[in-house]
Image 1 (cartoon, rainbow, N blue to C red):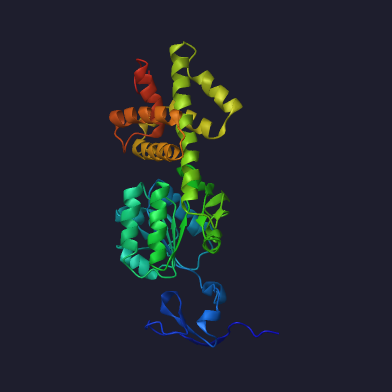
Image 2: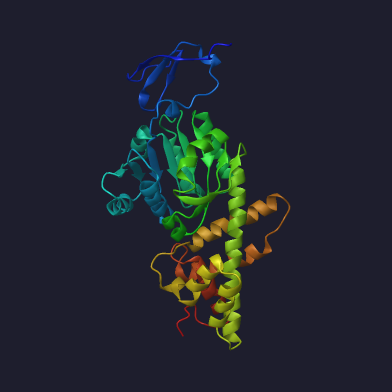
Length: 359
């Protein structure tokens, strides 16, 4: 019988030193001496071998990030506190104050967080923000670390990130999520991870049953595949708010009122349609201080979706209509203040009614 390809001879907990073969460097700068040549080792999951709990770093404490971190802390069976970093430290502090003491650790720089982390999650508003953060993340030693980006960005941007991460000896997974902030808070998101299967396996303990209810994986597929699906899926949301806004407005102008239309939506469709219909009919779209899905972010997604369609010789005409309405929302309420459901208000204005549905 062929002898095992490798076995452990010594385990030294020593400071970092140059990687002379045959040594493998673990997270936190531990090292193992192996009795067999490195060339004979195909793959080792060192965290599984030593049952080493990974250290998580979370970057981005916005509407989605808050709920996702909450569920990581409450249901992730973590042995170490989640490290939090946000450009505005106050957001990290406010979230940490709501969670059990000792379950989070706030850092003031990405450099500090990267040094401690094994798995790094990011969820940010747009391509520029993501690229800026990754540029800072990759300034440090990230070899062997797993970087997971949950942001909604252009597929081409994701591929550039994946290459940059690989060039630094780290692993990358694109993992956008489907679901509103309320779903993030409830741990009911749908995850779309794409990249090497082995890297997705490192991520799996934190998805279904922790931060989410399901996953749609693209194992051993390009990271951009996840973003392509995300943009197509978000185009459905853009179309949903457009149809609802137009339907409610026509019903009001026709004299039957918007409420009976909402009853039809609830009885026949439900789900996300009912959620957005409720936000419109109750006037939440103009009463809220902060949007759940800003007009600027929605327009960003619309632009990426239309660009994707154009790149494959197709069109998204209905998304073009939604984008035009969203432009009106941004002009009325502000791009970062107006909510996607404000499409209803924009449709109303075009029909000669007030933006606000309070009369």
